[in-house]
Length: 251
Length: 293
Image: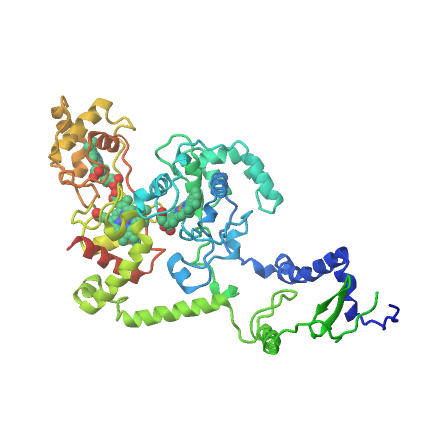
């Protein structure tokens, strides 16, 4: 029991790490942080990650409210918002998604599961009436649909008193909401569904290309369904692909 | 604790040990099969080649693009371009031929109908139903009753620019006024004219309805669009009220609701979403469903 230990190489000393859980933990952390450093860190400093495009603007307050409902209801569990650079997807849904198109999304809604179709470019593909009827009862329009009915959304008035706070939180995450946008956020919810209102022009200056109309014509008050439809109808419509140069942004 | 030696033979199993010992138990050495190990090394070598040829590592202001000049976006664009070119060949001039020419050429028509059917499933069926069967508020395209006209050109215009589509300034735009909501007709007048519409449609009016008033109001307010006999006007998209085909229903409640506050159905414009050949194919496909002229 008293053999003199031979001089051990570093290689042979792994017993030290393997028998000490704290050392092992530190070793594991160092090993995986290499992957993180190479795969994640560059995305924060590389300018080329997000394409330069025209037309992207932050969500209007009504669209944002709709987006919150989209997240709350888990629509992302069945719908992606990410058209991949694959032929069948581009032919069916339109131009592949750009990073720039989700740069104001916190959190993004790319999704990874498609029980239903991709929604990245659903904006203006169908009418508001269709969306309302479809949310109320998908099977009334698409008999074999497995999408659940969301009829309660058009019976629930939209709760938007905290809108300014939503905008403020997003501003801390880097979404360029101005003080004016935050101040006007409550009024802007109402303005967007009332194209004849006095604030309409100023609203359009704040949110260029926003769609001003009554999205849910069958209810006088603003419903959750209305906000959700306002959000769906703008998806994928901000970047004008006639002006966008795909060749300049090959990845 | 003794330092076990690497390569020591375990006396019981006769197998070599790794030299690791835990609380007096020694680990037997069961090496990976050679073939597996060499495949593994080959994969590592392959990955090094891959890094060099394809886009890989991040750099200071971009990423290593790789010597092959590959990008997934470039690849999909090239693929789509070549598919479009091949299709243009196969479609034997679908792009330049007129709708009538295509309809009279069996080979071109066959291709157009096949393309139209696919595009219809992706874009139109959610509203117009599979095969154009229609739904409440979304017209049946498989019958011979048309709101806006059934010639090839009229139909192509409907599909290209849509109906009351906010995104297209050449869209078809007639709006039926909201007679009740905007106070043009009083509640009892709406009821009277709704019953007159039922009479036009060969349906029983309600008992006690004021049909004389209804007929009067109809010729004053409605005949401009729907025609004196209610046969409709395709240039305005005003439906024929005398056939048995109803977009929103034929009971008094449904008709009154339309007169009170019409929905003025919206069909999106497809000009920006679909290319001209697809729109041509869809026109011919829709016409093949319904029967047009």
